[in-house]
Length: 142
Image 1 (cartoon, rainbow, N blue to C red):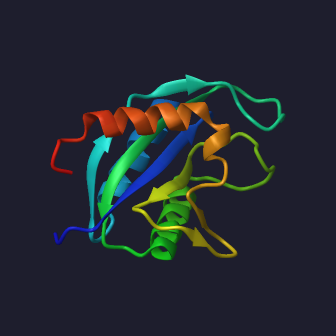
Image 2: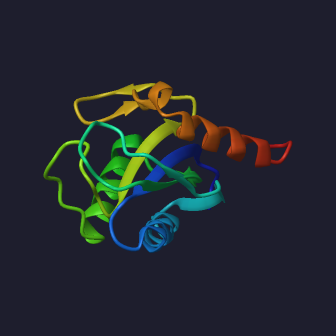
């Protein structure tokens, strides 16, 4: 595969077998066209955000290298969520799987459907920890 851009995608799950949902999402992300899974952070359990009563989340950050454009990657992420059974009902509510594009190379993207860097990055300390972990794992030449 030709080198693409480094993209960081956050995975989260708080329904059912949370670790299995993360694993299935990682498999599907790695199988996207023009995309390679580079690294994965540790999995971290966190309290839910947003005020809707629900159980804790398992969260993980993955680093991809992709030739997909940001909107195509977003569409693919939404397709993975749907294929894994996510139904959007309550904002900030419980879910089998949630995929968020946190960073897309050095790009800034602002459309009606996608904002990168993710606007909630500053409000999610676990995302920042996971990004730091992945950057600390990066080889010197990346």
